[in-house]
Image (cartoon, rainbow, N blue to C red; front, side):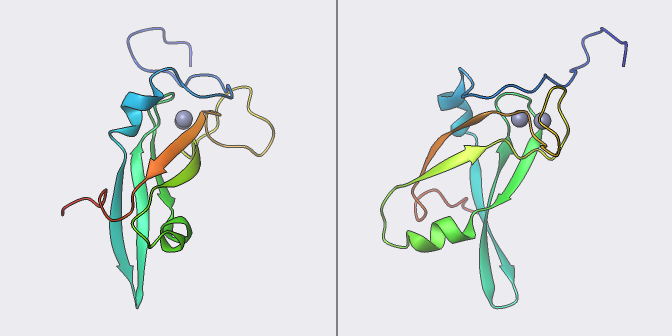
Length: 110
Ligand SMILES: [Zn+2]
Ligand SMILES: [Zn+2]
């Protein structure tokens, strides 16, 4: 871990909303996935702070909002990796922010 090239190295843990949050949110997508008789809504994207990919099951959030209204979802980095300085047992880089999800409209077309 002593390389200092252009390789991306994991950012240290830090709580808060990344400065480019608004832009990053635009690249998040919701995809539907069938599991038996259940349809799951998975939120995917890359964390705006550590750039690690994440996958979150937000079915509960989306189901609650079946009316076509925007729901506010408190997102937290869930990349599943350990970042230096994170509290014990905590994965993710600590980035968080509020996401506005419009379940019906934001579903990925494929
Ligand atoms: Zn990460
Ligand atoms: Zn992160």
